[in-house]
Length: 245
Image 1 (cartoon, rainbow, N blue to C red):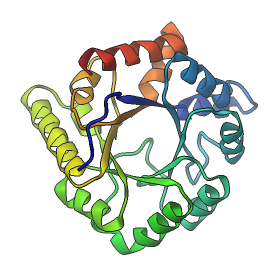
Image 2: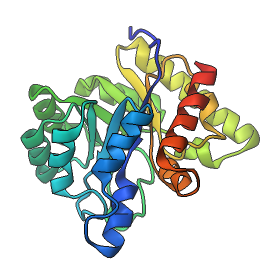
Image 3: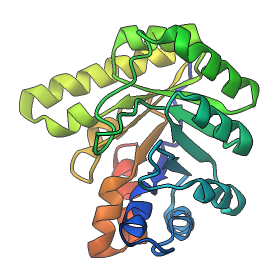
Image 4: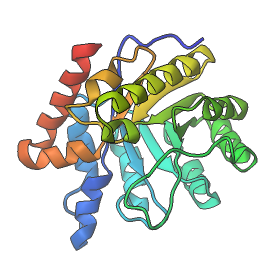
């Protein structure tokens, strides 16, 4: 059984700093500078999604992040041979396998690990053999957790987008689903993480789930930084998490 963590980690996703940079080309704003500011503000790790179309993080960003960071880098990646090769080249602390569609604006849901076990098995195996901690970005569903167990993934990250966009009793039902999934994962030795769509207003109930070890948050923090600064937005998110843990 996975032990409940004493400290709830915050992973800050810096993708959308790169999105702003890429809107005009050039080098500003620098996502690596943002990552270092995030660490200064209390981030326990940095997350970056290298997409097939390179719409935000670029290949050279991964190399620069690996050289600059003193905290773990979590590389979000699609389950493709190209991305596997890049992960094996750089060997980040962790790799989170996510679904990816070229036409989507952002990740729209969890990975169907249950329906893609044979395709995922060699990728998960190769990452693990290289000492990279594998995570699967999935819906809080028992079938997906069972698939993670069959694949030998040590971590799952639950997609909280549905929770974030619901309200009232529907949100309460989804929170219950997240809580039950986190308990099931931990019972079976898998470390549960969560992320997507979390804000100051909705993070508390997810952060309060005792088995959850890490939250990965990006878009909201980068947006909030426009008004209050990046360090301030991260410190406030850290404060909201600490209020319930």
